[in-house]
Length: 462
Ligand SMILES: [Zn+2]
Image 1 (cartoon, rainbow, N blue to C red):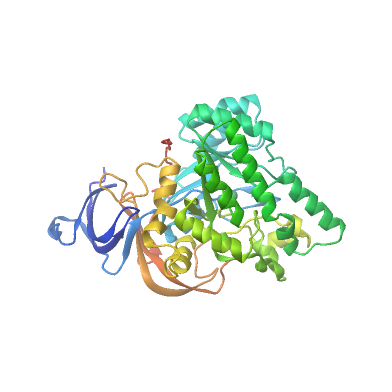
Image 2 (cartoon, rainbow, N blue to C red):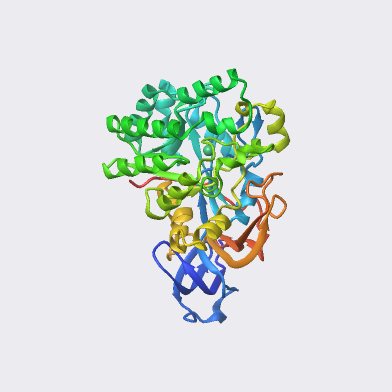
């Protein structure tokens, strides 16, 4: 058993609930104590980490990535090995990806297969959500057991009919009902499929193939309608719901209203919706920024920052889902509707939110910690994560908030040839990272091993 005693001293400690200069005592995998600077005698420690000048926060929790995921003819850039490596550089100590079963396959078997396949392949702790493509009896009956296996969250789509992912209202009601009986939480990708399909067919028939038509044919209204529909369905079958990647000005209003009505609805947005707009799709290489929902307008972006600061947004995730650029271009055949969707983003999330959020005074440091660590840990059932209280896991990010650098595909460590924020001048970088007491990143460089990360058992608290 690891009983190593480490002192992290003189750092600016930030959690959701407090901020100040403190020393932290780590024993083995856990945080043992927290005290004012100088209150622990330094001789008794095996290792001392000087955090003077650094911001010390709970390791980040990333609840939305697609590692090793097949989509629209390609497979995403990151698998658990390369993905958790990028996580470490991004200050993330817990990541939740999706197990990608095919339609009709057993959810439970798939979770077991993913567990087996990924053993010893993670630098930081990890877990899975399931994906549910159909509400057949065998799938529904598996949900309670899935929850008991520590996989209490699963995602459905209101779109992608062509690839067999669309859940109709009848199916959503069945899944909601089962969720209510099982202590689970349903994650939903909201875009009104018929609207997107109608507009896409029309655009193609009229000869429009340009990348920008991806944004024009998946408009804000389609997302808003789908979220409103989910809210209405929740009034019939009430169960906890987590709206993934809310991206529009109106989406956050609909979610806020539903919360005010007392519905158990939660929501995230993703880093890229807070940084970029659909102007990116206008250029010749606009296909690189195609994701769904699409990048939106400036007024949406501004509203997302307000909703991230004041609610109803509780989490900012990355929805990391990059694919090789060449593959995306080839598969597109020059058409906006054939580009595999998704961008990489697991590593830059913290730096970008710090640069654009904290330094521009849109959110403060404590809210940054809440959005990227404490709230996702709590919502997704990771009770030992997301805080720096004695007794919690020693997942600790030492963030250098002074360092300035240029973000590019080559200055990041993601397994990708594309950076959606290429050339951006940013401030802040993870200098060191502890995952359950083990140093996985030191002096800005990876030093952990892929056997350290363990699969996390999750149980939701409602
Ligand atoms: Zn996603």
